[in-house]
Every structure is written in structure tokens, then in C-alpha cells.
Image (cartoon, helix red, strand yellow):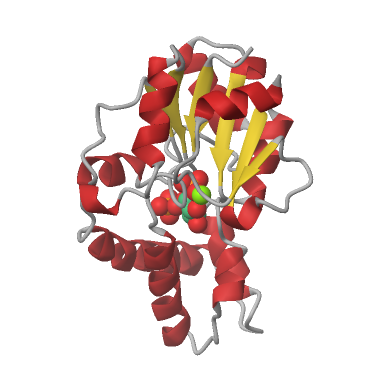
Length: 216
Ligand code: G16
Ligand code: MG
């Protein structure tokens, strides 16, 4: 029986993916690297340093650890400037309805995100105190597809992993949910992932009650 819903943040609650893309693109330009949206899609859900490695695969140049840390820091500062524009208007369609409906059914709700900017993003969209628990990039040593972030969220909610439904838009996130022994609802780009238990284009007009019936 499902007793909690754990929401990914970027791409599920709010569409910060475009800002990530713009920030990585700007860093790539400085390094003389051609960086596409397709490259960017492989960064979805994975940590900042792993995302940097995806970008650096596109160059023959080699860099020291300190140089890589400086690059990640630079990207993050460009990204933070873009995040400043975020407001509650940018919460993705259907996300709050889905969360509200979950609550009304007596389910607990949490955020499970790889992003170390999660507290800032939640503040900008007015949801700092909205969820029963938040686990994010600041809590973990291993990012998705490792299940750590979702397991911490479940622990903070005091529910067993097998009672959790994870809502994800990234393949790495669906894999993390399954590796943690949870159910996965795959949205958008992750919809084709064979491991998903449920699939939808987005949370718009999606009913949690109906989905739970599908799970049986
Ligand atoms: C998000 C994004 C990833 C990003 C990661 C780390 O994860 O999807 O593209 O690389 O956070 O972000 P930051 O650099 O802000 O720490 P999620 O799990 O919310 O989709
Ligand atoms: Mg995501």
C-alpha cells in the first residue's frame, strides 16, 4: 500500500532544466565546447560534478580537480543568477493539485532532489514549508541513480521504501526509485523507461487516486 509520494524537483515541481541548460551552455562556450540539448538531457537528475563530466566528454582537454571545482562553481553562479527569476508562477501545471490530492488521501509528501540548490528553489517558489520532508543534494554522498536521496526522504517521513511512490522525469531518477525498492511514476522524458511502474506525460490533470487503483 502506498503511504507517501516523493517528488523529484527539477522537471517535476518546477522547470529549472532550461536554466541548467543555459548555464552549462555558457560555461561550454567559454571552454570552446559545442554543447547541445541532447548532451544536456544526459545531465538530468545527476549531480553537479557528474554533469560537468558529461560536458567535458566533449573536449580533448584535461583539467585538474581544482579546475573542475572552479568550473562547477562558475556554472552554479550563472545558474543561481537565473534562479533569481523563479516565482510561484513557475510551478509546473498539475504539480500542486497532485500534491494536494495526495494529502487529502492521507498520504505524506516529500521532495527527493539531487540539487544542492533545493532550499533556494523551494523558497523562490513559495514551498519552503509545504512538504512533510525534504531530502536533497546537500544530504547525500551518491546521487541518482543511487537510491540514497529517496531512502533519506522515506526515513524522514518514517515510511518504508515499499510504501513510496516516486515521481520522476529522469531515467536516473526512475532507476534510483527502483533500486530503493519503491514504485516509480515516470513523466515526460523518462516515460519510456522500462523500469517505471506508471507513466504519464506530466502531472497535468493526473489523478493520484486513479494511479493508485492502477497499481492495485
Ligand atoms: C537536479 C537536475 C540535474 C542537476 C542536479 C544537481 O536534480 O535534474 O540536472 O545536475 O539537480 O543540481 P545542482 O547543481 O543545483 O546541485 P533533480 O533531482 O531535482 O532532478
Ligand atoms: Mg528531475
